[in-house]
Length: 463
Image (cartoon, rainbow, N blue to C red):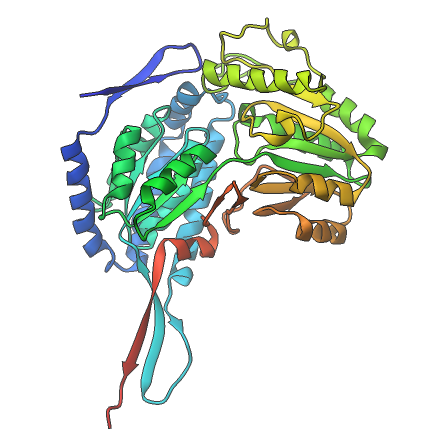
């Protein structure tokens, strides 16, 4: 049987090893999920909520172990790793709290002699394919809402973060979730593709690259099932002349470089009004230099490695291509560590004198890199923010809420922020446009993608 090895970016060691699921085990998981879901769909929402809230309790109790595993699997500094547990619980508890209302029958109004309503019916089996960069936050977006809606869930996590899938399974089991309703599977790409094609799977929730999304779409193309795709980003920010500059600088440094820039909604393109451009750049560079790059298991470290050495090489190549095109690097890597292409430890980089011919302003870099560009005003900023194949989030820093709203109406994005960025509010729909994906998770709207409407038209009087 094929083994899957997780190489830790911390020190290059094999952190864990798991065997890929046998085909017979996959078939058994599907069969058990189908049977368990037929009972679960009839379980009252309040009982589903009780079990899912119990999951939250077990998950929270394991915060320390989860944080340590997270740091070793994907490299996030240990000082920040527990935040993912808190964020996961925030999303889970919100979706549990709104489920009763979101899934309630819709009365379409009185009609003499009839009872008419709409009901949100579960789809069946939801197949979640989660990424490694926020392994719990990404998975919870579909796992808990799918269960609350009456579905069964199969979770395939990244080979970089297999222990995260196992934590979900163990905590749900401890919470009393009926057998068969949730299963974590370690799968190859080929097995994943076959599972998408299996007629027992009713919905696929995928988070990953644009190329990965295309592969999922191709696998599902001959089936009439829903596919939710949360893909890449090259997210922009605009700092207006009236912005609170220290606040904007602090927010944007964090938005660009937190998690070593490995966030689909991290800020990569920054447009700054010419009147404050020089002050912004000076403050941005100075604050970036405060990062401590090092071993993420050290509590003093504020910037860990990217996920693997190959990723660091790709990021360095995109930086080099931008510089070759005329960009100017504001940071010397040796300020943080000796330059070494054979390591995933990568210094943050700010590129100036940029334009939209360069990778930093066109491609998803997925690393600690940001391009900063001056603009004349709102119209130029909007034009440049929209000049991208991506549209996940975008943000503006301004003291004028009316202007922020007006600009936001013109920007092609799934989420529009004012005076903040790189955040997901579980009460709002998480959705991308263009190559950033399709479909929706979270909020009450997210439940619409995990259920199907069923109409009930009951004639009460026959005479």
